[in-house]
Length: 177
Length: 242
Image 1 (cartoon, rainbow over the protein chains, first blue to last red):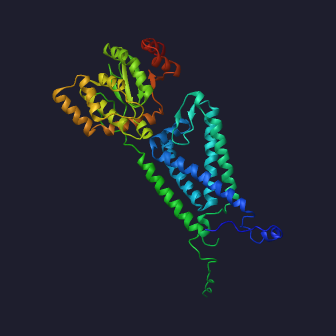
Image 2: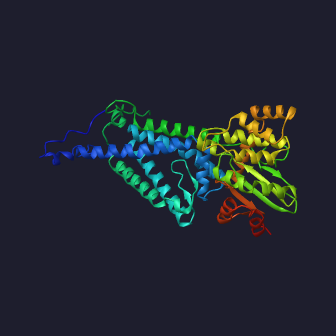
């Protein structure tokens, strides 16, 4: 485990930064990344665990979007929790951060697309993001908050793709880093 | 002429495994687990045999003149633990039983059990099995009424004793009651219960109660009326049906 490089001191550092392209330029950049990792990873991990303990519900949540026939919905509903848990774990421990964040961001894009699609077709469903999907009363839909949450997580994922080096990450133990 | 051997490549910093190796392992593990989980969601091929009045392909319990009879066909998707299903049954159950008795409608109960996963118990599956036991004992409708009339508070579920008790209420006694007890304990209809849930998934029904009349889904406002206003069953069915 290595913390962010000690760049305190102030003057004369800017010139040296070019020598170490992978180093975080300022300590707070690393900590933003750490927070991003824990936020995106934590949400994905919880979402995946809630889904995998109720796979029937997970498949139903996918069916509720009325986008896929049953066999496809079953494939998505069962595979998605596994991917969410894997990406969530990787981000929380900081392993393969860039790749995991890229997959996490891709998931968020797909989720936003799905929710926008459901909203625009006038469906009244819970997004099923945390395993409690299916139809709800029209006044109980939460499309906008769901979309904003996912866009926020997308932004954090994008940050990690650009700056994957963070403190307290297993990535620092990998070869050649 | 043999080529000169390639120069030996020395790792720059031989600390720990490479990112590529880890990535490969992670992708393999995720793929393997994904396939396992996917396989776990595969039900049977809807081949289970249910009780005396069940339809093939996990199609539910049919009571009345039959699904091919030229009468109003009602199809109810319900989960024993769904509170609104209980309110629906408590409101229309008796009227529905009368119309079935008179041969005016045929009702098919598609008994789902997805709330087990939601709530974290197994009461939907056990009580669905018990309803099929009641079907074999010839008391499906009274049993169905008793079960929903005494639906426990949110998520508390039923004990086996309660499930047997409703059969006694419905008039099952003697050897038949002993058989019923065994049926509740051994859950011989578990496979069919699973098929009913899978069939509902394949039908695209993921909320309960959902009611179809002559193949058309009953609109939400009519369903709400059925649940809230007593005595409107016939009127709603006639307006919805042919």
